[in-house]
Length: 252
Image 1 (tube, rainbow, N blue to C red):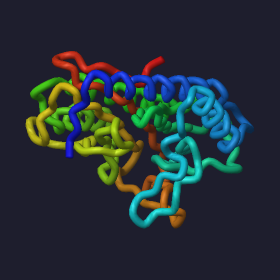
Image 2: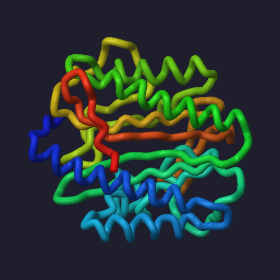
Image 3: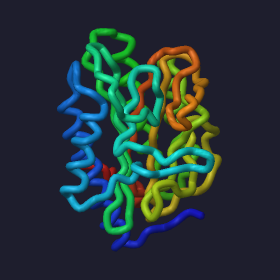
């Protein structure tokens, strides 16, 4: 079911999204060689709770999975998404992706970003292309367009730059629940899919691999890695379909 949000609901989602943005920007600044992903996760949880929010990922479970144990998904190098925070330390040259969800007053926000401070030009390009593809997808999130107009824009740009979009995972509606309809793949045929309507809130999230698009899941039930061991980048915003100018909600 696709939920169309009213003004009051949108304001509540906007508040959760603001906390998401604050949290990601806070943690991003603390990424450095030697810090553990568990330490980064604690920073995130402390900030979210100080703002009256609840970490939306912590304890979240899907069919057949254990509860997710962290506040953030922290995914390094060839981990695409759903990396579990723990004792792993950030190393010089790591590509680190942070994914954050917040629930406040019964409504959700969701966003992600990737951070890289190394010198590999191809990894830098992967980051740039992934982030640019997100904004190209967002541009298509206007009333009367279709979901796969977003998908097509992302796929076309990514593949034209020699990278691949992950096909086993996708974006989604968000707001009343962490994951809602519609699913928003990062590949598709332009002019197909559900029609977009004002009041829809969507989490658009390109996950882009340097190499092949195939991925696999580890035995922990969460961690997703690239099939070829090459790095992956991830950027995401929660947006509002609002006439012909989509509004990015996950901003400070």
